Length: 437
Image (cartoon, rainbow, N blue to C red):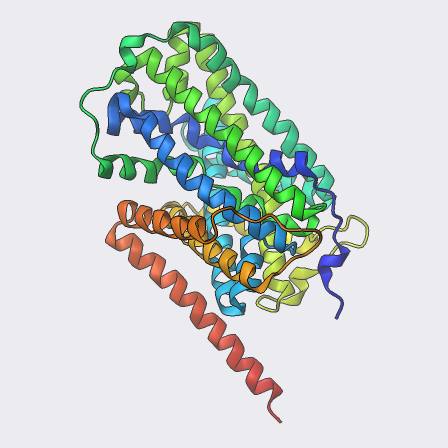
C-alpha cells in the first residue's frame, strides 16, 4: 500500500514552523506562572526560567537533530520509532497523543469559561461554555481539514495577535519597574529552584506536539533546527522580560495575584484598560494554543494509523485538500468530548509528566539515529559535543520528574506506559495469529 505521507503537501517552511512552535509554547501559562515563580522563589524567580532555558535548550538540540534526520509525520513518535523500534515508538506516540489531547481539552475549557463569564452567570454560563467549546473546536477542525496552509496561516495570525499585548506589557511596564522590587533575599536552595522550574517549564513545553506535522515540512534537515532554535530562543527572551517587568512592578505582591498576575501588574501602570488588554490577550493566547493543537496533534493520530496501530481509515488523506481529514475530525470529536466531560483535570497533571518522558525517549533516539546514520534529505544537523547533550537531557528531565511528580502521579504515568506496552503486545499477538498458516 502506498505510504500516505507522500500524499501530504510539504507546505511548512522555517517561518511557518517557527510560528507553530512559538505559538504552541507561548500559551496561557505565561499569563499565570509569574505569580507561581514569585510565590516559591521571591525575587530569585528568574532563576527558575534560566533553569528551564537550560533544560529546554538541551531538548531543542535533541529535537533539532532528530527532526533533521527523520521527516515522517508524527514528530517525536516518528523519531523514536525509527531509532528504537515500533514498541518504543508506539509508547512515544501514545504519550504524545495523551499529552496533546488532555492539554488541549483543558485550554478549551478555560477559553470557553473566560468568554462565557463575560456574557452570563449561573446555568446560562454553563450552557454557553459548552456551546463555545463545540463551536471553537469545530471551527478549528474545519479550518485544518481544508488545508495545512490555512491552518498554519491561522496560527501565524493568532501568534502575532497574542504577542502584541505581551510586547506592549514589556515595553510600557519597563518604565515602571522599581529596582527595590527585584532585590533578592537569601539565595534559594537548588532543590527549590528545580522544583519551581518543574512547574514553570510547562510554559516552555509544546515543541513535542508542534513538530508532529513533520511530514508536511519543507527541507526538514534545514527547517526543523532553524525553526526550533528561533522559536524557543524568542520564547525564552520573552518570558524573562515578562517576569522581570511583572516582578519589578509589583514585587512580592505578585505572588498573591492568583491566575492574573500580568493583568494585575498592567493595572498598576495602565489602569483598567491595561488590565482588560492583558485579560483579552490571555484569551487570544488560549485560542492560539488551540489552533496549534488542532494543527499538530491529529498528525500523531494519523501517524499511529499509518503504521498500523490504529484503524487504517484514520490515515486517509483528503483527495482535494491533501490533509489527514479523518484524523482531524476524530481528534476534534475526542477533544470536545473530553472538554465537555469535565474529567480531564487529573489527566492534565499526567500530561505534564508525559512530556518529560518524551524528551528522554527523544534524547535516546538521537544517539541511536546518529549511530545508524539515518538521514532524510540533505546533510543532517549534528549536536556538538558527542553524547553529552543527549545524556544531559535524560538526567535533567529525570530529575524534573522526581521533583514534580507525586507518588500517585508517577504510578499513573507507569500505568499509562504499561498499558501502551500491553496494547502493543496484544496487537502483535493478533498479527501473529492472522499470519499463521
